[in-house]
Image 1: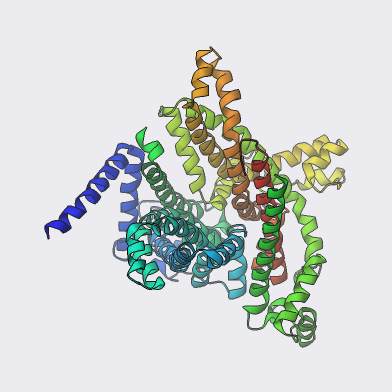
Image 2: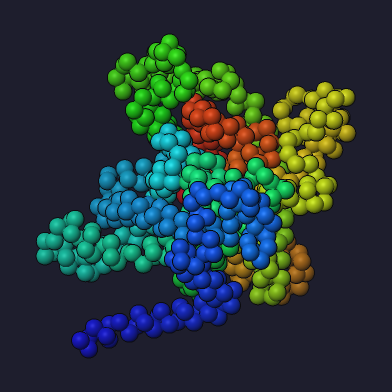
Length: 294
Length: 336
């Protein structure tokens, strides 16, 4: 038992140190707090929004296009639904789709990268050429044509973005795997005759996962933007889902007179993505030894 | 050097073939009935049969693949469902406007981004550095389509100084013929000396151009800042300083020169992202470019047009990446 806590100590110390570095930069600390609030709001959304029935198709035509007021902080939309409730609930939609998208990309990208890096040779060559090909589509364009063919829905948008996103993780994991496979414990495992597959998934993958997790959480912002862009183009969420991109796209018809239908969902996207990017920037600085010393 | 370029050229060709294969899979293998997609929702039996014939769907997949590549080599991207025109002809019509917009946005990005980055690096950790860093991260986090709407709200609705969209007002086309030389309106107006029309077109390009430039401005200034910070710590800079070279000259001439390589690479790579941003922005400002074309194609489920734009965009992206790599390789400090 003592050994176990001892082995954990340096990890805790480095976590403390990282947190200290993070806290030193007031802007990133602010982003962290704000992000926690956003996540909390997203989790609690169904219970805390003032008009829970408004996230569905319910219409109160009498209340349509009310300007922001005390009763409706962000005004009401074309069906008289409370924009504030929909924006808060939209966080739930956006965060969960982003997590799903990144998750699927990881499921495809990580094993491929680990296999490519560990086995090397032809396997590596083939896998890396395939990632090159996927990365030569301008971002979004591959997703656009995929969703257009599959039919537009949030599920297809998630799949399409994941299909264009995984190569980044393959590249990252491959690089990690190449350095890890030279380490003593992997060689030891090889010597005692452990199978390749077991080495890859028991020894290599767990050891290269932490930079992947950092990268994945930094990517969340980008994925949220991409999902919103697809929805805005009409290739993502379908009405009445309170998805931010879709809300802007619907509100656009009544823009600029009923500006609140567009401006508030956009602000929500901006703040959420900004928090992720600020944290990502801070993480990069903490992890990069060059800037860490300064 | 020559060997490297040849190698890079070959690998680009392989990637190009891969991209074409993927679009083939998306267009012909994934849908259960490609002909139905290709002929549109309201196709008659006759049109469906014709589409099957055109796509060679009665042949085996490998044969279809070969026909497909043959068609692409001849520049045949199929016919748009909306206009019944060949997609290639339509692309030729729409590309110049997009090119004009993107070029101008990048010039703007370099003109603003580099000085901002230099300034930020010089005043590291001061208030202005923080503001410019916040701005650059903010610019990357903004949903472009929303910025477009926001700018319309301010400059069209509230201030009423700039037009809502399009590339030319109706008034401007009444008295003068629209010049058509390169298809890039501003450029054509300059060539033909139609300065009044140039002014009108310029007013129209301001908002879309700023919207698209935001992302590269943020990127360029961040890259310039971080590259400069590293360079300013190098010995030759200290040496230069001790020789009494002015700080201004040091920064703008000796330090900046060495940081441009990193910036150039990022600018080239951000082109792809900017291209897709352009699509969204064009749709909002009804700018007559590829973006408006593809968003119209998306709403009307015009598959040949969507696939055509995807292939075209990817080819451009591959060429840009190739050029970026060749430019970097031509730097004598880079050993290959």
